[in-house]
Amino acid sequence: MVVKSTLRAGLKKDRATADVELATPSKARLILAAEQLFAERGIEGVSLREVASAAGQANNAAVHYHFKSRQGLVAAIFAYRVAQMDRIRSEMLRRLVAAGQERDLRALLCVLLLPHVELVDEGGTHPHARFLGQYVTRYRPAGMPHVEADSSSAESLMKVTHLIYDRLGFLPRELARKRLELITLLFLNMLVRYDAGMIAESPQPPLQEQIDDTLEMALGALPAPQPAKLSGARGR
Image (cartoon, rainbow, N blue to C red):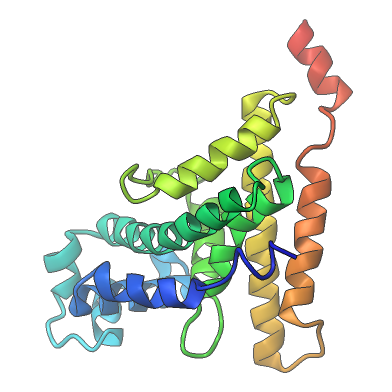
């Protein structure tokens, strides 16, 4: 299938290239250390001094020097990861267009979601999935300022999102947006659960099988008809 083979070809190569180009080594170490600690203990549960220490920085003020504040550090994590994933998505979109799949909703969801699978730490787990899931479910609702993706570093993300919205033109845009956010959380939580099972050495299906099952669930939920109560409420 094109989605599994062609679209995912070269993802690890793109990820490695992005790692080299997106930040200086010292800033990258701080970003990755912060992401790991925030994923484990929460964004507010870690001191910036601890981040500097985990990154091997002798200067405890290194985070303030590079990022000015905790919010600046959170924004830097997003910028680093968004740019990494956008490079991957750009190549996936190029292959998707070449295969004539611009209107294939499953292929579009793969472009949106699969880059998260590639963001792994040395242990093979997905700290960005844990970090992002916490940010969306705990910190944004509590009032933490939303970090907007920069259009120059998220061009492919914006492109695939609009292609998905075009396929869901029969739904109100806000409803489509909410569904896409919930489906992204579903995918992130699948990765987090998989990591937990791997760490605990619990029996579980292979990751690819879980990815395929989650994509099928998303494919069924995303284009579902608008609930009648919502339609009626909008009509009044």
